Image 1: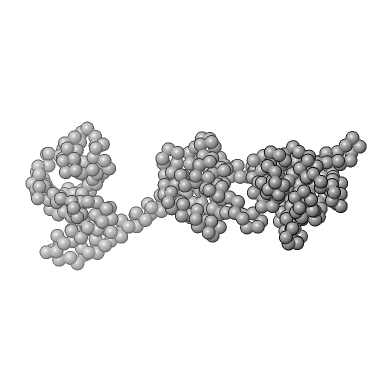
Image 2: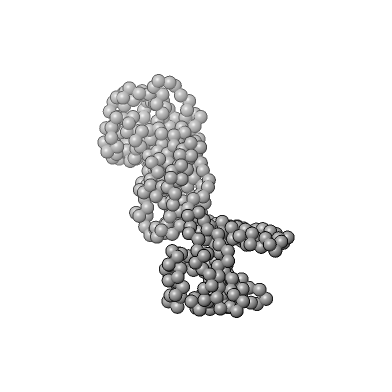
Length: 410
């Protein structure tokens, strides 16, 4: 019996047993053998699963023949004809009365589901037998080709799904994953993943834990999280999670499907970034339109504040070249609280002291240095100057008018 079938059977809330009929040389049913039982069935008998599997019915239920019900003949009819039957049965050794629903496959195998009605008569199976039957059918690994084909179709659909799919137990440990899950998280083999907590696959494990709580409370959840792949790479993942319940409402496990939306998220961020830049430029332009000449310095400081706040930089500034282009001076500066101003130290600096810098600016190139430590060898002079000021990254944009370099914003 496959793990998939066992998972269904193990989690049924009521006692369940799967049997093989034993017949004599004349073709008459004389007993049956237990092939598989669930924990609820073992609890009903007071035996362990190991004491039941591969044992005969007469060994597991001694004295049951004393019942007025001809149980072996009935089970034999069910197993050999593929019929189903519902009846009430009293098990004398355990002094309990059960409502029994039995299904056969016509090849000598049958399943039985039991509902304890000792304390209260119940018509539960009359109401719910159509709900139980498909679950039992999916859980039995019998001889019926049609059932087996349907199971294989379902398993193949999950396995070949382009969406990542996972099952986890109620403790949050993974019990099943499909190949798409391995690809999304960058793992090679199932053994690297199965048994691990679902919380360990996300950048924000606390947020993931809160989502699991919501799942227990509401039964489902849809949203996105940042996944942490095996190699440490982060991915945006959209997922739909739901609790899987037994017929009586008892939660069995958690199931979720995942879709990589990293590309979409990056596109959204790029669009948002572009719109925000356009807004800043528009605000600065509108501010300068009717600004009197004596207020130009205020306008420049306003522009530095808008761009500095948006890019979240510690220092933003403007440098202006002298008329003869020999030196440059820091004319405007805006620093975050706690950042030491440098404007007084950066006056009348000869442009020849920063040759690499000037080569870029005179070609009207933007200088983007994400990491000062990784600057090229030809920029060794500029690297030393920046490191002396504890600068770790810098962005410099040339100020050009009528094809002439006037200065730069940093």
